Length: 497
Image (cartoon, rainbow, N blue to C red):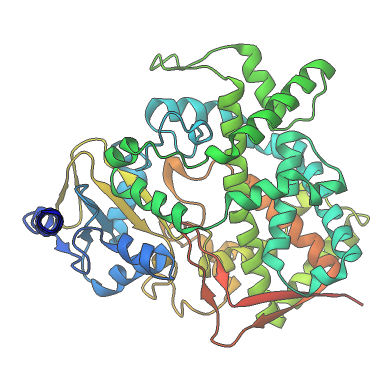
């Protein structure tokens, strides 16, 4: 009896898998769209879960396999999913018809308090929160926060010099330490050297750990919103007590002391003093509770630590491989300090053209994000291929592949900062470069992250030269979900004489 039950269950499961695969394939082929057949039920997510490669690399297989297709369908349980590879269609999704694709493609559960942030919010609620947070990232605000970034960079240099073993390797982790310190300063007003050994650093490191369970949760979030909600998966539950407590403590202290530091905490105090946030056009309301603001603080760590550390790391890696570029950047940095009485200012950082070129080219080669996800909120049609996209369709658009396509970047694997000279940028299409995303949902903290990364790089290269060490087998990428992390390579800091 038991054996019969097991066999019956196995037959039902296998039958469902067969039916689901056929359903996914028919769904796209009857719309005239090629279908990725490697796994008709779970598509690239099966390989992501079971193999030691990043999701970006699995999506790259689709890009290579269908070079002439404007878009390719693939399986994600019963959710129609489309990998859009034609550049005109990509622009249509991200910018031209943004309103039809404004949804991020993931819907966290309401019980997941820290997921209630601007990164995962959707619809009118997202618009209201983004509008409320945008003033924090104006040039005026960034100028006023620059002292925090500079102090963090100076403390980081002191920290490296006091701990010489850190200069020999494990550089990505060390850069993440700097980024965590800078974020702590901008969010919680913590600007002491002890931050490098603080609970903030420990917590931010845990938030970026890649585990099998976390990869399964991420896959389910992308495969099926109903299943994700049914299982009541909370992505960030473990970090709630720490971040909620930290933001409450910071805000109450600011209120008592009535001190202005022109940072994120100031913005939070201001929002709470105004009461309920309301969009006069849509009527949508949002209460800026401590929990909602803690979620935005957590977003700062998600968006400001690992991606920024990655931008710094890949820039150092490429400079270490190209001594002539490193020498030119050293010269630009030294001259900038000499012209400004050995001081660094916001305007000086922004004005360093070769630093901008080198970092931009490094992020073209190794972008912090490998791809973007969206979900259609209405029926629409992609212009190239006349592809009908129904409401609820999951969309994946490539970043890494565009950055490495010889059609858009001749000799794409070569490090050529000159691609991003001011003159060359005049004739370049904006959609072809997307290290921080594109369109209305581009990373709201993009300018903050770039300023933080540049400030850190300037102080590092003012004090050190660098050596890139590539292990046997060449550079590779770590198994990551959306982000891209270099592996099998490290950077060594050598004091300048």
